Image 1 (tube, rainbow, N blue to C red):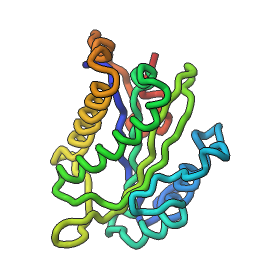
Image 2 (spheres, rainbow, N blue to C red; image 1 turned 45 degrees about the vertical axis):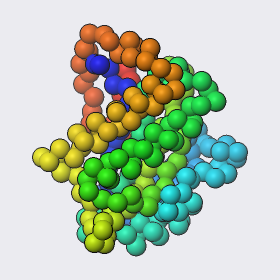
Image 3 (cartoon, helix red, strand yellow; image 1 turned 60 degrees about the vertical axis):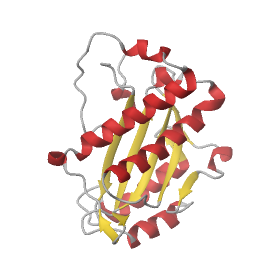
Length: 218
């Protein structure tokens, strides 16, 4: 399959400020953005602000999440900030009343599978489901996941780092793809796979881009 079916992205916030948007202040601003907006141009509606955060032990409000990440930070990582963004064209095949549940379920499965594969126990975390429109007018449901710098093990809390040389980022991508593939198979069957049986097309995608539209070019 040449065209991406899901874009998982993992970044982190450092405990130290190293420029605009970084450090504790930048992290707090990001949490506010996740809580109150769908994207840079759209505020979250009053109905969506109710129970905005899906609390899996880290908190149900940005202030609580911020405080817990401060408490569970490692030397180099204040918090991990993941994005789980399924391809809009595939999500359009899912019945509308099942889409939000599917994305939330996939998000939680990715968190659990990734930490288990890395030898950690399931950490406390929280996430927000954003509902935005692409430039082409497609719905693009995606989640922003917040995880602390420390992760639980049998022996206690330990730092969790991403080492590209050890394939930690590739493992993350593989798990995300597999979990979404299985979710689509369970929900709509195997027909969706034909949409990805096409000649490979190479796109130059800036790896530091935060604009989700660039990941799904037309």
